Length: 293
Image 1 (cartoon, rainbow, N blue to C red):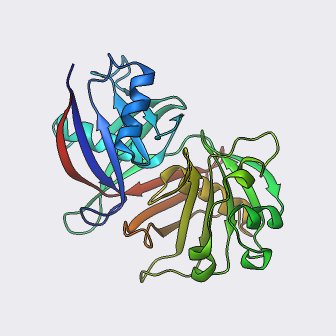
Image 2 (cartoon, rainbow, N blue to C red; image 1 turned 135 degrees about the vertical axis):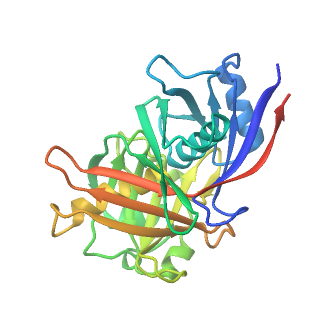
Image 3 (cartoon, one colour; image 1 turned 30 degrees about the vertical axis):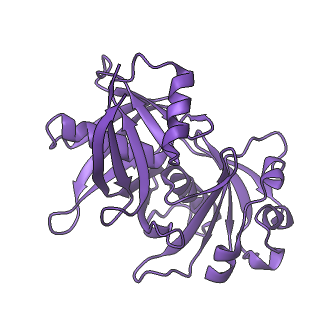
């Protein structure tokens, strides 16, 4: 049975940038094994599969696959899928909700600047994990401990996927990092990490706050042009490291620059009485639509 297929660029500031996403609609009849093979065929960081209609609460059931495995949550697939569904259902709804394995994730569309619009997701609960020795983090990306900023401790963080986080000294160290898959697999005992997120305060673009890279293993060492889930976790990580944990913040992060897929991710953290609210935003551009035979 044919399935409608859309490709969009997420966290882009123009078409043919950002992180590519394939969205397969009317996917109810596809077996899990078929979804995995399609994601491998697409070979993007993620491919999503959407049920034919929303559930009783109005949320669209969605499954997310990398070329190697299914994920409970990921940021750019959430924003990109919500944008496709919004366009197909009228194109002006301010809110689209997706039912993922981590629960219901709302995506709100908000104006920004002259005629521009940004999709914002509210992240699921984020859990701070254990501190990681800088020597181990450095070895996992073939750096040395002096490449890391000693005042910022490294941790693993979970929000569905689990990533290790570390701040490096600058662009030179950031660009030099290369994933060691075997060391990543043993970086945190008892925890299966999905990747390692590195960031620094030295940026290529003007007016930005951080530059980042996400290195991960999906049947081989890969790099993600833009990572919304890791950006949400970064919000919790930065709050944990802050001297003012009761103060919220809003920052802009570049990713994917050296890959030729420049991406801009917006991160907003609002500290509330119960728990911090973390939102991740970006623009979405449609690129292609067709039929998956």
